[in-house]
Length: 313
Image (cartoon, rainbow, N blue to C red):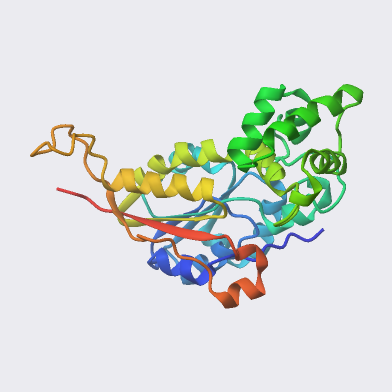
């Protein structure tokens, strides 16, 4: 199957990075290389892009798509949470910009073997890195009822999480749950039919399990500070998210890096010693145009937030 993924907020993201011809940039979620292609087009002979992805299929596709730029492109198979090790391994101290396009790609959703989609029957998997040990099958069959409830409630914001977790545990007593189709039927049976409105009934649960399998929220929250530290003065971190949990993390992390002071508000001067690392460029997130949404439905929930590193004296 051909790796295809239509990059969302493409023009807005590229513009947000303020690309310099001789700059060094990191695409921490390389995917099919859509954003990277536009960055590389703008780089001169001395410019450089480091593309990071944990999905072998993505790396193969991006390598082919970006081969005309191979003299200024380095692709690394890794998770963006390892950006410190990746950059240090390449002897790079600071970069001019970093991009993250969080979430699952169109290819991963459409490739049935990967088990990301609730629209067809496939083996339970959902691993973005196919070499990772934890898959959706283990989560569904090995987590206890309380753990399942917390995952589905916290990561899927599913109001029927308790009932879904209970039905999963009951079903797997009969036999292991092995496919997305089996899981979908269990979820449907856990939600009153008259309340199965506003999209597919399995949507939130599938999102929750995928986030748990790939530790998506932990990785995002634990890496933003490091990425900001690697930016040169004036460098920018641009992050695209697709649901409220991710967006909230980015919003709060950017705010804390802009104003990290922990002193009580009634203190006349700061005594905690924590200094701002820069400025939030997007007070409100940038969202796709109606035209983009009409051309790419998966862009509908996307939001772009941007942080600029600044030396504060």
